[in-house]
Image (cartoon, rainbow, N blue to C red; front, top):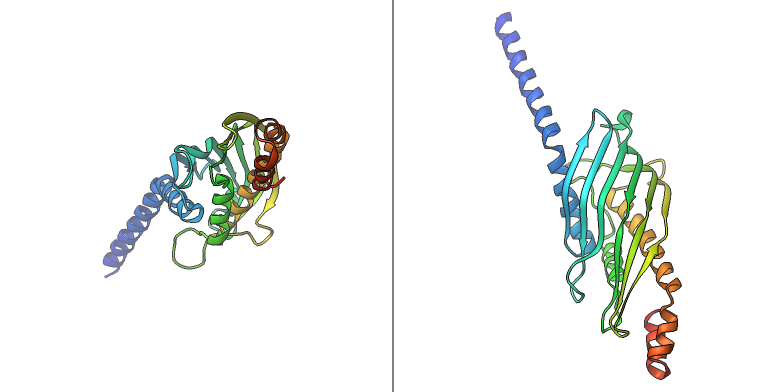
Length: 237
């Protein structure tokens, strides 16, 4: 009888080990699918990730070619593109709630700021969609959703392409460095809520950079009069 119990325990141990191996080996694809699913639902447009590489043993993660497509009614292509996102994960928090992300770093993010013929801005559409969604996308698992605490977020060396249909002009501007600390607070926040905060900062930094680019001067020079005044209202001037 004792022999059969030991055999049974050995089988259970092998099964448990197999489950952990499956989750660990599939973690990259699980994260990729979660980002694409929840990201697309929240932003109201297509979100794609080229690849995800996470090493829990080293506490590191890398996302490559993260794309947020332009919403309907705008040109094809990406509204936001991150070639590479690196994460530093607190090993002691793995399996806890919240999971602590020590640092998120994005080098050379690219943003397309586009105003269509109706005067709508693509970044505003995405931000409004995210606001309506509540930004509550969690881990997709049953039970208590996983919360995150991001100690430090930084994006630098970014570039903005500015397209304004009414002006027929295409310009580029430098995206100011975006820095955020202690996202999620001590209790952490849902991943979607963290994303909402980050996107809000990107939208604000983009708007500030566009204003400094001299769009107002182009309005006065090329349109002027009633058309210029109308476009000023569209651009929030």
